[in-house]
Image (tube, rainbow, N blue to C red; front, side):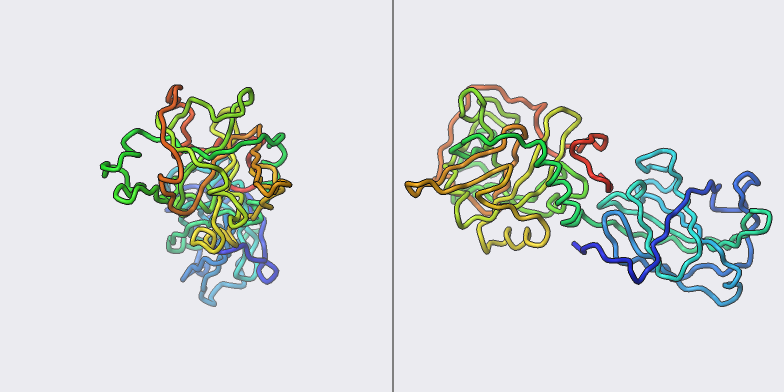
Length: 372
């Protein structure tokens, strides 16, 4: 993912809303837009330095009439529906106005730009008249671009929010993974995330659940595990949304001094429960290489979510946060012979599944001031 760029060499404009009418023809008198003028039409639109909530834009123009330009009008729309304003706040129009500044200029605004979203953009030059109306050029061509993932700056903001509610740490001894019975059967060819012949669980690409801007969604390969325990028993719960059969493995096999741990996401699904995703990646593995530079690294023995510490007898002890539901992604294959598979006695609670779950964009606990 391209990191955020400084706008020191590029004017950063504050875009103000302007009520524009349809692109074709002239606007009504109420809109403050006059007839189409012979002002230069922007050509060869270029988008660069794209982040999750900003981009730089520049274009070429003929010399004729350039000295008359006072403003630029920018028509920015989500690609999924160019005719309808689908920004998060309905009172933000898709037509924006900025004072004419040297190009390229930086367009920044988390209230109308979301991460990982395809947009269309076109530009119009304008000259403000003495009576307050605008003379405008024809619209430029329409071009498309896609905003970027969260940067590590944004992820660190999420991390701080997650740390604030993680609660105290509880001991645990095993990681576990629930699936349907067929998943664990050697003869089953139904799961691409299983190597049935060699009896291994294989990493698969993470779905799009959680924060829309998370850099791991749809990109990072891993195997999902849980580690949360019941408060009264200290053991894994007997209910699961993912299946009645559970693979269970000792914690030190997946999490030890050769494992790096990263913060991946923090979200909720319109409920009071909050989820934290952490990634466990063996040092030097492909998963580790993916995470470095993209995700905040956590201290293995001292963090608020999942810790591994040395005891006096040389053994390792493990703790998980009490007040969040941890989703642990292990980035490498896991042999079934390293653990046990057994049926749980509880129910399959499908309502608690997070598969492709969408984050609640209105939650003040787990959202930051960029696109959700």
